[in-house]
Length: 278
Ligand SMILES: Nc1ncnc2c1ncn2[C@@H]1O[C@H](COP(=O)(O)OP(=O)(O)OP(=O)(O)O)[C@@H](O)[C@H]1O
Ligand SMILES: [Mg+2]
Image (cartoon, rainbow, N blue to C red; front, side, top):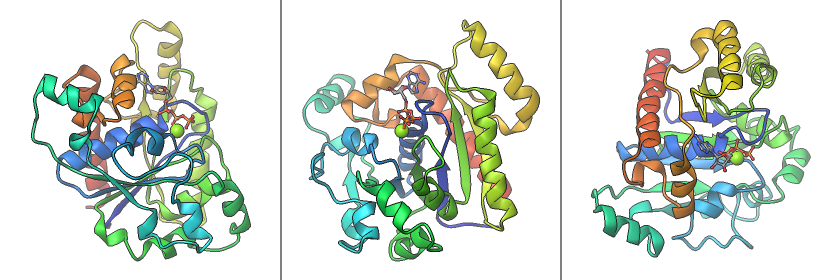
């Protein structure tokens, strides 16, 4: 079944495995290819907004958010900030001058969650299709709606999963098979209950050949979860943190190995979706 927009949640039970990094990296790759992209953050920490909205009127102390929309204080349009990575000033501009412009002037829209999203999500947890209802007004403006979830099965995660069609689970260096499997089971529960939600795949993030522990872990993953694991892994690289410090998605950052990993992985992700929607 063809779906438009494609709604993808990056989710994992364990913290720090790369949900937010994966969400912005995939968003950047899709935007570079010309897709219209919105990142919806469901994590009260709003890391992505703090790092990537530095060229907008986003104020880390006081900002418009999904929580405010859910409380009826502002419209959904008002909660969306638009960033243009290649028009950054300051350090990012220096970087651009050093490496030359690629002329890749694309935008990424981001909707922050708001610090009070857990309270709001708890209060509204009985309502059905909440996110779908508020998104109706804007969702057709996008090809991809990418959701960055908190590391838990909190109410706000459930709101996001109810709205999403696909889940991608990034598994970091410390991800246990158990924590990944818990996320797989959560998605299965949604499917059993009639939701149109598919587990698209599992990303092996921060991959490093030299780590024995990781290798063993990866073998268990591959034995049990098999084809769910994307064949393209994402290497452990300091370029991830550098790009984050500049507020640039890897697709707007000077060419690097981990950027290539993300370009290849994004192609694999899109291919999987295309196959499911045939
Ligand atoms: N491939 C990688 N190589 C190096 N560092 C990475 C890589 N992926 C993520 N990181 C770093 O690991 C940390 C956690 O990543 P990220 O914030 O994406 O995880 P998360 O799952 O969103 O975490 P949380 O559960 O706190 O929301 C960040 O500092 C990020 O820069
Ligand atoms: Mg995160």
